[in-house]
Length: 353
Ligand SMILES: [Ca+2]
Image: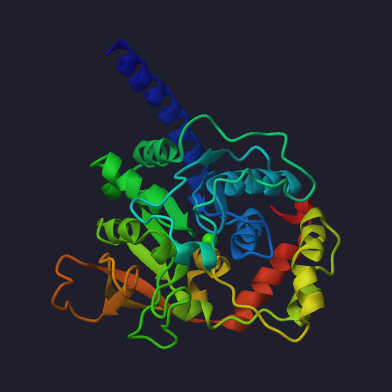
């Protein structure tokens, strides 16, 4: 009981400072965000999405929360800490979140397909070694809930991994969902719109497939949601020419890209690559880069051939009762997006503000 009271007092003190920080961000015209990620270093999309966010003065990152997805939770956490160090912003706090999906168990299919969310192996050292700073003691879910409740209606969450942390936050506090200003999600694929096939199973997208139950809870939470699905990712095509423009300057970030993304283009100079999480972040910086349509979207949680498949419709259909309307991104102004992306990545630390 006493411990509980002390906990509440601590929470109130911490909340006061968090609210104060948000007030500062608002006055500067910045969008305060929580960056929720199954982080991996570039050339993976989470790595490049964080670079874009860190180099964009329109965004203030209140904290980064990690989740198992592309790699294990431990790898996501050590990689993101190192990325912040390389970017010269190690003061941004990192909170470790869920190390497994809510329900989805490791399977032979999971092991043989993309993503190592089930892995228990110790993380390998990121480029340049482990960061000096460690993750915070507080859990990701506790940080997410406390930060949102300290400034109701002000905090945007950008979730670019499986939605495990977000679903846990929704379940842990009845006030939480109503307090979130907006949730931007990279996830899903919508068959009713062009380019709506899946990328893990024929119809399921990776983030939703890894934790379908979390996606189901999140999409039905009542939080205002903008979905950045595979449909819009497939409007992108990162080529060697754009990569070379990106690394035309010499900064710690462009050096990291030369060491990672550069290898990809050295091996396959004529291939182009989709961009995923980068588009979700870019749409927070400049919403006019994407076109959206209002659709009801739900996620299949039956353990059969459509496990983790997102289904979108213009009207509610049988079985989707209770599904929520979301803004679904389906088109991208690719030339403006890639020019902005390249310009932001090129920036030196001194140009950032
Ligand atoms: Ca991701």
